[in-house]
Amino acid sequence: MSRLVLVLGDQLSSSLSALQAADKAQDVVVMAEAADETAYVRHHPKKIALIFAAMRKFARALEEAGWQVAYSQLDDTDNAGSIVGELLRRAEQYGAQEVLATEPGEWRLITALKYAPLKVHILQDDRFIASHKVFEDWAAGRKQLRMEYFYRDMRRETGLLMEDGQPIGGKWNFDHDNRKPAPDDIAFEGPLRFAPDETVEEVLELVEARFGNHFGAVRPFWFATTREEALQQLDHFVSKGLDKFGDYQDAMLNDNRFLYHGLVSTSLNIGLLGPLEVCEAAAQAYARGDAPINAAEGFIRQIIGWREYVRGIYFLEGEDYPSRNALGHTRALPDLYWGAETRMNCMAKAVEQTREEAYAHHIQRLMVTGNFALLAGVDPEEVHQWYLAVYADAFEWVEAPNTVGMSQFADGGIIASKPYVSSGAYINRMSDYCKSCAYSVSTKTGEKACPFNLLYWHFLNRHRERFSSNARMGNMYRTWDRMDQEHRDRVLKEGDAFLARLEAGETV
Ligand code: FAD
Ligand code: DLZ
Ligand code: SF4
Image 1 (cartoon, rainbow, N blue to C red):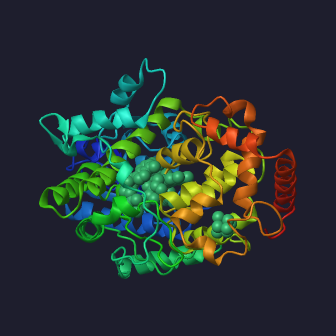
Image 2 (image 1 turned 180 degrees about the vertical axis):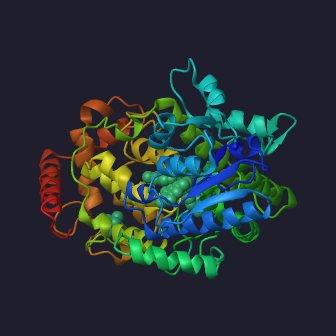
């Protein structure tokens, strides 16, 4: 009797464990564009288009490789609208009773599969370097989890940038050499832009018709939607952009959205690329002398370090992780996150780019939109749902720990040892945003004062009890305490007034 083989929209890898465990001669692959999956948050239309286009092309590639594929398009009249609904429908159609599934990257879907009235075998997702067991063993008994130590184990495990058991260059981490402010000129032309073919065009029309009212522009659409395109994108970045990745990974510019970033997360996260091949490409560029160690090491650390680490935390911490709220923040997400007018140029730029590209790089996510939400005390679950909706690379296993943990400190310090908050000075140092802003970054109080300056101290003051004993934050509190009382009172009063205006929906 045939079994069903579930392939989700972010599982587009021919090495997928469910496919490996199946029998091409008799099992049926089930892939479904499911209304429920498009609706649990209001995904950016580009994200939906990316997933549907890549799913359709992957289904075709599976058929060409001899698989029988039962593919449901969103508008098919008999589409049941949910993953489990589609499995039940296909089970009846093919007389199947068992399902092979690779573990989804979201607790929501894992639970749905577990309770489905079918025998579902959930297999490990081995497209990652560290299995759940490896991560659990690593974490067991440690008082504090820190990515850096996990990363070193991953270097040893993969042998990436290692020589005779030691890190190449004599250090594990070259971050000290990275994080330079934005340069005047960017030599990298940015990512390759793939023109829509017939399949993509069909999907774009569907997405425009069904999700045109979601936040975000569906066109121009140029993401890689096949493994071949993803490999071209990777090769383009490694040969032309990687050399300066380390230097400028934290820089931000008004007129350059991609700087020296790889744009590989969309392909990695839907399975078109694997983490090891991406890292090996970077390690080879270093070996050839095409990229310095600070760039290759920095890039590889993001993937075998951060990417694996946040996944480990998501599964270790359990289902309630995305709704944690250690700081008790309750403010509603301000409308400016959905494009309402704002006078803060950094926020306007980050949101505008998010709307147009479904992409913002790490520092825009962390130190602009994330920083503002944290300083303003926005409910972290609302922040989480925003990030999950608006970025094309957002799947809960990677988005939630980055948002809830790293960016909002809502997990109480599991991912980050201190909150990522900064005043406007950091944004000014790393970008040219402040030069064209209605606020003045060097002004601390008054009408022109940069809101990040006011809210930074407001945040520290209102969370004093929790953070003043944090060794990494003592300096900040000492600086605050040295300011004269009158100034501090004024900052807090103006901070309150700013938050009241934000709450009232005024343009800030
Ligand atoms: P590059 O800057 O070129 O980096 C290379 C690769 O490293 C990325 O493709 C990505 O796979 C990996 N990487 C880098 N940083 C991280 C990280 N912190 N966690 C996991 N992988 C990382 N990344 C996602 O893939 N999906 C998300 O939903 C997501 N949400 C985020 C939310 C917040 C609040 C923050 C602060 C970060 C988030 N990140 C997320 C991490 C990071 O911003 C993106 O991975 C990166 O911007 C993707 O662009 P890129 O491919 O050009 O990356
Ligand atoms: C994000 C997403 C969207 C928008 N649509 C689909 C879909 O129609 N079918 C599907 O199989 N997967 C989709 N996904 C991805 C899932 O919602 C989910 O985030 C991942 O499978 C979790 O690993
Ligand atoms: Fe952002 Fe403040 Fe700079 Fe304006 S002055 S761009 S609000 S950091």
